[in-house]
Amino acid sequence: MRKALSVAVIHLIAWAIGLMWMIPFLGLLMTSIRPFSEISHGWWSIKPFTLTIGNYVRAWNLPGAPLREGLVNSLIITIPATVASVFLASLAGYGFARFRFRMQKYFFVAIVLLLALPPQIVGIPVFSLLKQMKLLNTHLGTIAIHTAWGIPWLIFFLRNYFSTLPIEVEEAARVDGASDFTVFYRIILPMSIPALISATVLQFIWTWNDLFFSLITLFSPEKMTAIQRLPLMKERFLEDWELLSAASVIVSLVPISVFSFLQKYYVKGMTAWIGK
Image 1 (cartoon, rainbow, N blue to C red):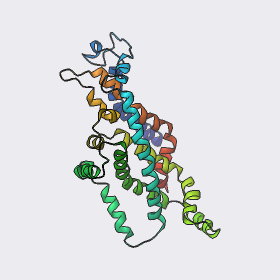
Image 2 (image 1 turned 30 degrees about the vertical axis):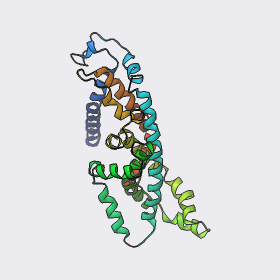
Image 3 (image 1 turned 90 degrees about the horizontal axis):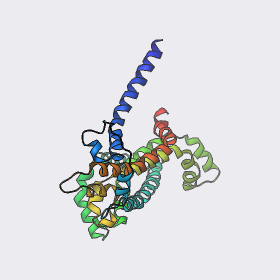
Image 4 (image 1 turned 135 degrees about the vertical axis):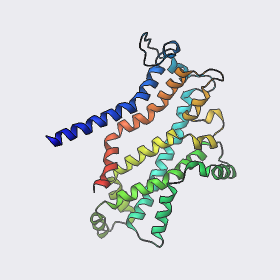
């Protein structure tokens, strides 16, 4: 009885916290589907309630900063940056988990320390480097920065997961004549799909929502990401809250959809190496 009561209390607390987190998004959604005259005194007032998709249409086709172009630019940057960083980090993470080399621990400690660095600390060096490489104000330059910045934490995450995999399977494959890359490609990667999906989801969401690196690498309006276009929708003397809310909902739908679609594998990958 006591155990059932404690479980019920835990569930109640979890639901309460979840509802608290949902309130801001509910306000955003309510603001986006109603005219300004109905939300000027608070989005929670539902009398009168006029449902409209006009705010979404305006955000999608806004002159000077249409959100549809920003979404395409965000996908052009986010997908390659996510795939490249996860692939490179998986190779490095497997190397740290299974191979021994000089100064290995020092290299890994350096990678862990890089996780503590805020992006702002490398803003000027990144700007100067891309300018020298003639990659400033290009999607390729932004992809490179997101890839490089995401690799350290992905190495840390995947290395910990690879360390939990049974080494006997790899040894049996090597006895049969498999090379190190064959073992990695045909055995380790299929066994690590939950972890790879978890890493992919997290890297995708971070890259999609990042504003700082996009601000210092992209300047042309036609190249700006969806996140960059949100501030452009603000008027000088008037805040168009319903337009900004509609645009924010559209931008957030992509990472929410990715997370929802891969949630099962994401949770499994995040908890697998902890449980072992």
